[in-house]
Length: 301
Image (cartoon, rainbow, N blue to C red):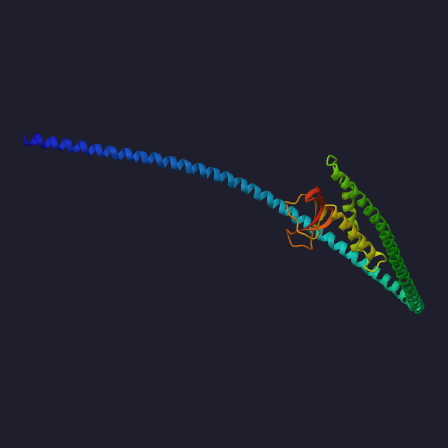
């Protein structure tokens, strides 16, 4: 019985040992297969590297041949350059000798004629200075004459303009008086609509004359009389119920009912807008606008 048990235990142990040995053998076989695959890959890489090395060797041989060819060409070029340098040296020596001979001849000629050139140059400078002085004096005199003529012409034109404007003011004043009489007749017959065309024309002329007066010399003949006439016609204009809205020099704002032309200006602060010219004035009749202004606005940059 004991023998049977021992045999059974021995058989079991032998079986277990055999299974372990089989498992180890399978693992080793798998590792051998993996190693073989790695070896094959390494051999493939080595084969590719050998091919690349062969190509590089071929390229190196070609480059060596090209370098040898370039060395030969360079050597030939050096020889050619040396020959050219020798030829140039000979030619330069000949040219230098010829140039020295020519310079020597020129020095002799210059020494001979130098005194004549100095005398001629001094004479030319003196003559040029005299002519410059005479021309400068003549130009200064002509400039004074031209400026005097311009001033006299401007003065004559301003005086003539004052005469014409004075006559125009008289005519407009007369027409305004007639218009006032007509207005009184209209007030008696309220069905007739009031015509403002004359008043608008008078307003435009007042603005124009004011602008001209500002540009004239205060001592111009007839200027004070014209200013007084304009003041009277403005009073007559106002007495008829009309008003000229003063805008010149005031700041412009978007709410104004005007036609505005904007001009950039470097004299104003950035963004500031000032009315610098009245092309057509705003005219009100009995506090109601009958003509909107047309103005010029300078905008600071």
